Image (cartoon, rainbow, N blue to C red; front, side, top):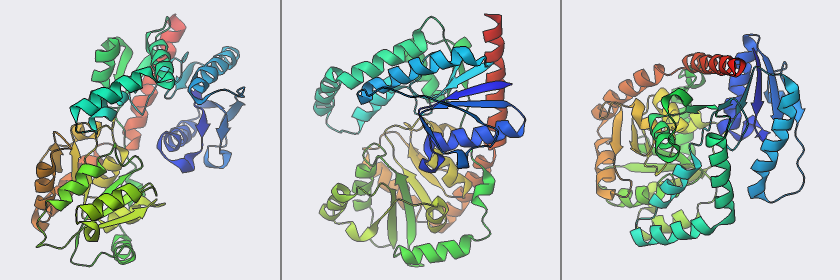
Length: 389
């Protein structure tokens, strides 16, 4: 099959969707498919050698207009490409398949407001957002993306995201396909786990007797770090406990909050972690009380490492859990008492052990090979629809 990928920048070292595109491209290339990439930037050393590159050059323009210009430039180039199927990621119009790993923009805006506990503040910020020029531009682009004359096959990363597409745009089943994220179990080979666990716990100041919880994310406020710190403050101090916070180096506001709440001695801000295995293996359980995650990859990775998980119902990855087998799913990240109670349960070694086994079994069901076969089926369907049209 002749397949084109369209994405502004593919630098897999940055993680996220860019790493995913590289993984999917390598697997498609291994099966002998002809692959093309339409992008402004890429790292060829991290992509398959068989990939054909089509550079997209944009004129100087404001950030909120770049998706419009990029989509228009890609459409012009794709018309000359003769590809069987063109795949767009995120803010991209005019492709046969759209795979928005970040979910629906309209839903993202709604959930971003949930991180503010005060409903009046939410309403005020919602009005301000509605007046923002970038917001209006992205809303218009998204409507054209999904409700244009040529409707694409849309891949939803979770049932939550599929529901958002139905609620916001009325998309029907014929245009929606559910393909969940997956993990590569080989990435988390546990042979050197004891060594890594001891080395990095010592590096981050965790004693052998500490029960260590791990939180990971770049957008700390959206991922629920503020209510998590409040919850740590509500836990009894009669058991040794430490929270590791990995991700963004911009920690100053949260370090101040930890001090104000009297939990600074129970929290370590470790910043960006180049190899997340070090953090996973150093921890005893994973906590991710997010206000929005289409399907959190770190939750899947944590379960693959055998970590019990505490997350929220605003995380599409919670659909893969059978709580309380692998851990807990809370209804509201602002419910500090409930979050603290769930973490307190994880201080019990027997409870953690049972959840650990269940988490590893659940993660093993969602392998990248299974995901790849589903994606290939969507591409084949889209190519058939395109030919029939």
